[in-house]
Amino acid sequence: MKFLTGRQSRPIGTTLLAAGLAAGIGLTQSTHASVAIPFVSLDWSASGTDHQNTYLMHQDSDTHWYDNSSNAWVFEGGDTSSAWGLSWNMTAGDVLGTTTGDAGISQFINANLAVTNNSDSFQTFSGLVTFLLPKEFVGGTLMNGSVSASVQDVFGDGAEIRSVDNLPIYQSYIDGNPIQALFESDFSLTATNGETVSESATFGISSPMVGPDALVSISLMLNFELSPYDTANVVGTYEIASMIPAPGALPLLAAMALGFTSRRRRQ
Image (cartoon, rainbow, N blue to C red; front, side, top):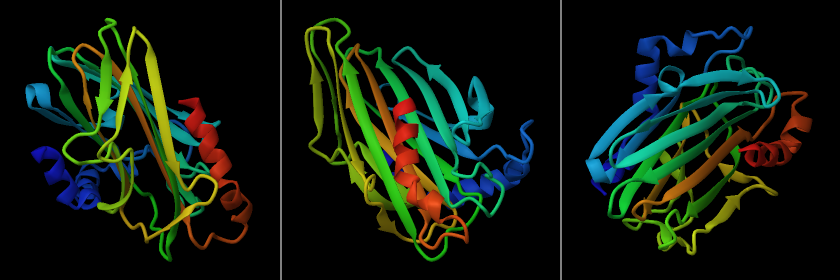
């Protein structure tokens, strides 16, 4: 798919950073004291209508708010066309709830995309979710992530969600560079008899994966093909933490996997 190939070759974070600074996003404050609205974007593509669009979560979501229980911003919204329907629920933030400060040791994004194929043929859908980091992570990172997919056989004639163009359904990035893939190029999930089926995969949950410095952004790509007149839900999560935590932050770093799992279950 040409759109996806082009997206993957771009310096993702750099492009969005320029846009964010130009719009003054990094300085935008919410009504919640001392917590800035993070810059989160969704680059969306649907093959059935050759549709491409970029949604800025703080502008294009139907609603957004700060969730004190998870120390994260929540964004809910969607878009529709004659060929497809899309809704999103995203969260982005950090362990300490200070997305403007240097104290946070962990940053995460959680993207839940619900898609309906309203056309009479398979369609390819992709969503590139990018979160501009409020601080640099120098000296290496620790990472974890997950993906889950479900597909519903709406009319009882069979439904399928599958990988396409030799690309994984889930791909994470740091500063535009690919890091970890899940649901590789031969993945397929099928539902029959009006049922809904699901499957999930993770990395670094019980033992965080070592990663590179993160200076600008973290991103995740959700890319899949969906059968006609059916509905799918794909959830991707990605979290990074400092390899060398700040003084006093070790207990939080040790609890990173536990907190991540809790956030994933709430979606």
